[in-house]
Length: 587
Image 1 (cartoon, rainbow, N blue to C red):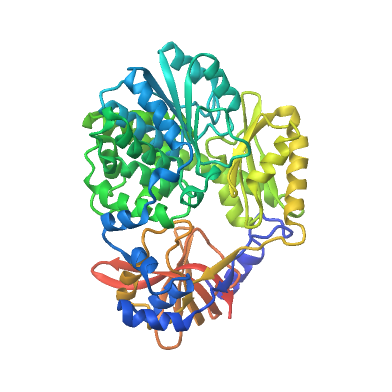
Image 2 (cartoon, rainbow, N blue to C red):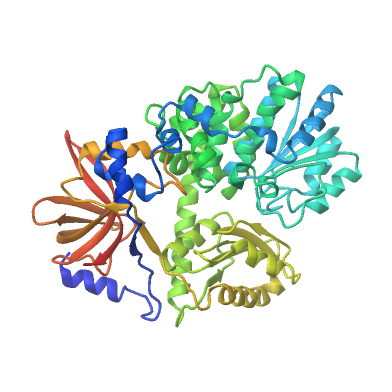
């Protein structure tokens, strides 16, 4: 690709309105604390680049840094996991569970259809079954019932004779359904991590948002792990449980649920990477095999391999497929179910891309974009609208709502930008009575509403986007941890930077700023990615920008500054470093 071709493609992409522009990240360098970095090198034997990254992320010499750098999972867990005593509602839940088990009552577990809910509910189900009990596991149907507890689940549990209901990854906003269960003689324990506007009328409410346990960052699957860990100490029938057997479920939920991988979450993820490879659970082994991660396992194997396949069931058909996979002890059945998830994930990828292209066409047909994007189409599969919303947010960096239509209602997902609260927006619109259901986090959420309310919800959405963002509309910024040169970017450095693993939200892979590089050549790979050769005049290195076929600053002869994550490219016996480009600016 020549310089003029690259410029032409970036300025007027085919079929796009010139008034609607893609958002390109600007570069920001974290505050450099060179004095601290200089202390870290002699103390910990690390390279100057790694020391600068640690210092820029706020680390000082001492116990916190030593815990962070701890490579032995058991030691890290002992030091980094908070004890459960301060988890609000947990002891109430233990008392209910202890009494129910002692009376020989049937117990129902109801969990969400995503990775977090499924891995959380399965933990409790397997733990109770291991203790000789016969619990029931319920998953709502995304398309027929939507998110959250519903009366169908309660009714089926009642017919089955269940006296205790445990919800996982929802329940905080299900006051009506909880009351219904209680009116029919059931006790209810809610294990959830979503925002608390008001506490539900549950008999035990376990949600770190109400008490600040572990800084409120644990997902529902991690809370389920704490639940069974504590039950081992309190409920005599569960005394023989080994909580670490269940840690991989908590880790998969943690890694896939977009909670920050810091503090206890990082410990859970690190422990999972060590324990998952040794698991004897048939379903987990089948998942490892289907994503080719039996020997080489990383957070990416989970977040981009296992997670999407688990989610594909709920997105495309029914999450009970995953429940069957994660509770079976039959190797043959596990292999068959994992293969079915793999097929569903491929179907999901095609469906998502079709919806993304259609949504992009709608956006580019606009005359301008202001504070948000809301697009709806009856052809949008409601199982992938959240993924499409994230893709559009990445492209335009505006609060984005994408909706499909089913069962007489619009159903969709919202993704937010820095400085915009999705949960606050949903709450304010919900207060007007326009929504049938709605809830979420600071950065993401979902809602449904009647067809006749579309125009009113759309108006309220744009008003809320303007209210929150007017005067301080954010632009996408990519923060580099520190500066580096091509000379410093060696295979040894790449290996050392793996000390920061596991990577995820809140603990991204180290990003390095390279100044004054010249683009020697550039080409498009597979009509999907950009590959360029960069030089500082002394050394050269390849740079890759994924899912991008044009960039206004990348063309032959350009002088640029880039932020990149260094990696290793092994090809036909040759090993060399390369840069995964995250942001590019003209120098």
